[in-house]
Length: 139
Image 1 (cartoon, helix red, strand yellow):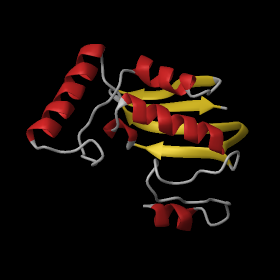
Image 2 (cartoon, rainbow, N blue to C red; image 1 turned 135 degrees about the horizontal axis):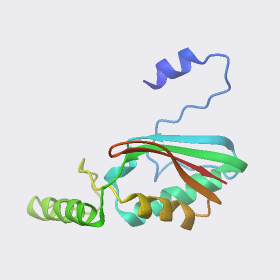
Image 3 (tube, one colour; image 1 turned 90 degrees about the vertical axis):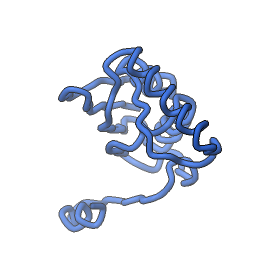
Image 4 (tube, helix red, strand yellow; image 1 turned 120 degrees about the vertical axis):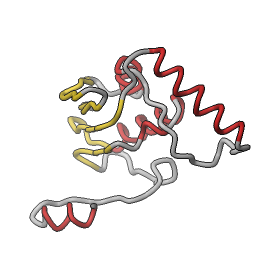
């Protein structure tokens, strides 16, 4: 998909990065915008806070971060998904440092709060279709 994106927008100055969010050395104030599509709902609160901070720091002043991802409908669903995530890891003896593909979405309020805590000055849901939301966070 990244190759198709690059082919489709050859006239744009796109830098495509396919890497681990947590390992990639984002440079400070390097990008006008950053985009994440349906990937961060696999990470716990603390890890998401870390990546939002890194993404915010990598943007120029006035830059934007766009995220499309799933959200939990309510705190009960958020807590249930987290319990299921923790239970599956424990039952299967999966260490914390090993990635597993289990959904642990946050409520919209918690998602927005994390981005605000990372230092984004304006965070808003610009589109929603059931549990899929597109967020825009401005530096």
